[in-house]
Length: 463
Image 1: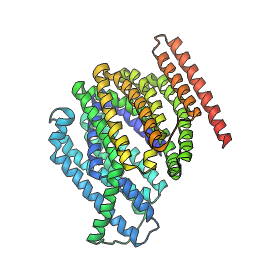
Image 2 (image 1 turned 120 degrees about the vertical axis):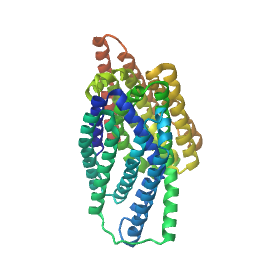
Image 3 (image 1 turned 90 degrees about the vertical axis):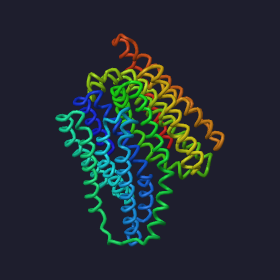
Image 4 (image 1 turned 180 degrees about the horizontal axis):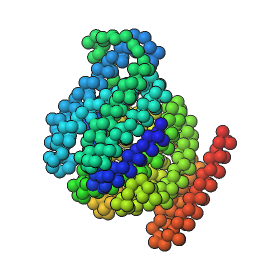
């Protein structure tokens, strides 16, 4: 499902680039990030909390029927709140996002999209909680593909004026497919919960959701602020170029992160009570991340010009250097990944809030703004590298002092080797003579791939 959704998103990005150009992609990005912030703020983190509660009662019966009625009503209330807020603050949202009130009516129209998206996310959470993986996957992929087929003509015939209708259509199609899947999955008797039941369950869901969503919302808001800064100190085209580079790099590495998290986090949670065993597990995962993300980062650096021409258009060529620096940044982000889950697995909410929500987003915002201010577009790549280097140091220091976590000699070796090879590949990419730079980069990639495959094979044999 993740791979198909990635493909659909890449195809959508290609059509946006073709029909709307850098300015259109910038407008689309600004509208998307601003509405995503509203959606996450209005939904109160209920999606993740609903998954947990539904999973605990998925065997059925009256308790599940009551919970479904309460969650449906609660999600609808939050959707109405998001819709109303978007309408009431449409002028301010336009001014904050674009520096003027020219897009106020677009935000009024997007209120409908916000309502449908929040309701659709609630239905998706129920499917996930019921562990209806097949239905969820089919609904997500078919809905996304159908939305794409309907959206492309809007981009083609209406240009930038088709962005808002396309967003509304996409949300409506996803809502429709999730609704159909949910009706086919479960049929419960219509039970009207009492006021006390509704209040009790809602309080628990909102309390749990608020903790779970805080980090996600902070990250979305930080990205929104970066986009606003880029628009105000550059142009809408600048936002489009930055988001295009982000989209390509994140689409390719997102599947790796998702696959690793699905297996790693449950095992880490099981070992969280024993610091020694936890350290062994985190170090093993850190070694795997270095071996997996080293070649992936180098592949992004080498193929950046080809990917841009293939997935975007020639007008996006200015982001080549930015993407290459982002390749190195993605490797460093992969190295942070295993340590980032420790505080969450330990259920240390206060430290999780300080580290994952306050620190990381403050650093991201500060470095991104400074990077663009001093070095223009490529400075955002420098910022990503500097941000992740600092986070590696801080995460290691904090987890070491509180939980006794230490890098193993194998992890240190893989960190040094893969970072060094990736840096050499990045340096080779700036050689003007392609007949020198390309063979050099391909040789370094070959060394990295062979080493990773040999090392992973040995680790599997040791198991």
